[in-house]
Length: 69
Length: 257
Image (cartoon, rainbow over the protein chains, first blue to last red):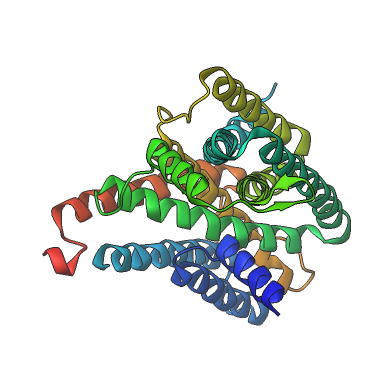
């Protein structure tokens, strides 16, 4: 059990790092992008820069949070 | 050599160099305090584990996954990695986070090495063996990740591996001659540059990979194709620069406003 917990902890630290908001934000933005792609709601020309801008927003929020701590 | 290949080698070199510097600090501290035999045994085992992971993961990713899925997975991981590096570099540059100090890390590791008890297993000093194994494995895993992701996406794993290998030879060579941590390496600047590169490529590939959810599962195209890469890099650089300026003035920090 200790090994499993340690193994999980290792991969969490490796992938997610010290601010889970970035990982969560990126996954949320990409999931929203995936829905837009699957439903063909907007054209690729709009979707691609839109998702890119949302990712910039994610790190912006994370930096503000980091500055508050 | 094409500009793309040169860029790939330089990116892998820079990203790997900072990881090699960090691993070197841990290995030196353990070697000095716990003896070189156990320390080098830990390094050797970590290298074997890393080689196995590189071969397995690289083959599985390249052979089993369609291009758009590969782009989405690799791009997402790259993006999360890159944004973490960029965030820390921005906070350090704004004076809100302590800079990496290899001399300080070395002192802490040496203290830990001297303070740890004596425990022998398999004829090795267990503390020195485990700490050097973990240090090299963890930092090495980041290098492997960078080489595989950059290499697969540029369809040139050997060039990415060459960049990492040059960094390894250079850092370890200088470390062996100097026999001390490489505190002179401008780690924050290098990490800033690498964070920008990882974020740029991560954004590019993750968004292209969303095409897996479209009819036909073809990768999406950025306006202008590959020409969007320098534009993305400029956007990330401009964003980071603006964030540092605003943080220094206290405008992004309600507590300091």
